[in-house]
Image 1: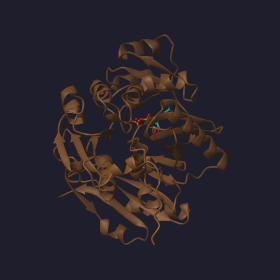
Image 2: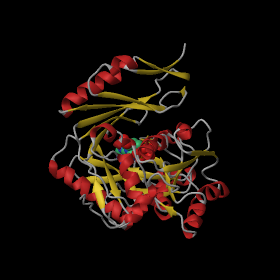
Image 3: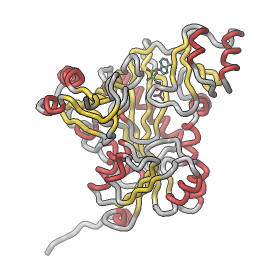
Image 4: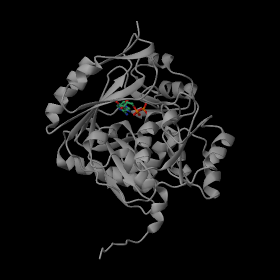
Length: 397
Ligand code: ADP
């Protein structure tokens, strides 16, 4: 006679091959990679994005075109789903609050998003909760910033950050002298102390509604010097165990303090004295975790779904060292995209390109990424450099 083992919590099974619906606000590449996992588990999805050509449009069960910042659009979209998540943090918060009141599970919560959307508010949150971060001052506009410099209230050099609307380094500028202010837009901003860092690190934390967490290994991010965009992500980071432990502990504290549900990517600076400072967080899958698709037992997208649906969290251990190379549009090219020499990199062992599905390229636009896996991180780094120098994201003609 056959014996079956029955476990508690049968409620979980209702996600699979059923009418349960997961809503995703934003239909870009992060959403597209989330959809690989919802497809794997046969979980039904609805996606909302302003562009009908969004990378997610073809992978979800139902796609809606609409404004993520419009109350009525987000509310109407959310009423049709059971759990709502985001792949971008600039979404209409009053609509999310109302949906939550009416029983829709919203992860990340509107409270977390409110603390993150504005960089000044985010920095105050760290200060209030004793989370180490670079010192800063907030300014309502460019005039008050200029006055702050004139009265010596801020010391040069400093890092200027627009409190809203910046991403991938485009709302960030290093101000070395008064004349550098000329290029800045007139927005609310913060002036942050310039950190003399050894490394930029990141830790992805997954937390479920019961507060259980798993943490991915610490990764190291290498940035493009001009575009301020991440060029390589290395897992594991080439740092000591003591620094890695400190980084993971701080990232876990940040996740608990936000009472965050889902993935939280915590970007960190490792200073020359091996202090760890929190730079900023993203409450969703993040490009510092793309390596996990090939290199980890549970990739970050699957882990996000497990966390927000209160399913068992998977192992965050790596099967091999992994490096992500960002594929962004080359300078001097604009128009219909061509991935030149993609066949050459596909011949290399352990190399997998990911193409996000954006038809048009422009300088520094994120068009895809390439993952390199290898037993040895230093060998992987050499292959990554070769990949970077071989493939070119350009336009036709
Ligand atoms: P974004 O939200 O656009 O990613 P970040 O705050 O992460 O902006 O800043 C982009 C990059 O600028 C960082 O990855 C880092 O290289 C540099 N940077 C940011 N803040 C500081 C700082 N306080 N000191 C030195 N460099 C910084």
